[in-house]
Amino acid sequence: MNILDQIAEWVRENPGKTAGAACGFIIGILLFTIGWWKTMIVVILVMAGFMIGKSRDDNVSLVDQITGLFRRNRD
Image 1 (tube, one colour):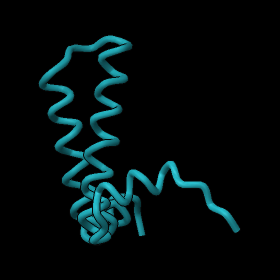
Image 2 (image 1 turned 120 degrees about the vertical axis):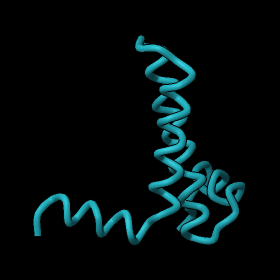
Image 3 (image 1 turned 180 degrees about the vertical axis):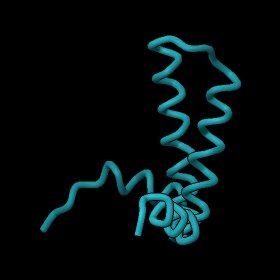
């Protein structure tokens, strides 16, 4: 299985993550020009889009997912 097949399979399995990341990336590119800080903003937008898409794929509230990032695991 080559890399393009693996990517296509991942996209089929995770449409929300793919769409969210793509939307964040496109919006970031449209809003900003190239530069260090502006590039960081694009990265943040892509990550936000990915998280929104992931929450849709996993049927989890976005608020629950964000609070899960900051929750300590007490085992």
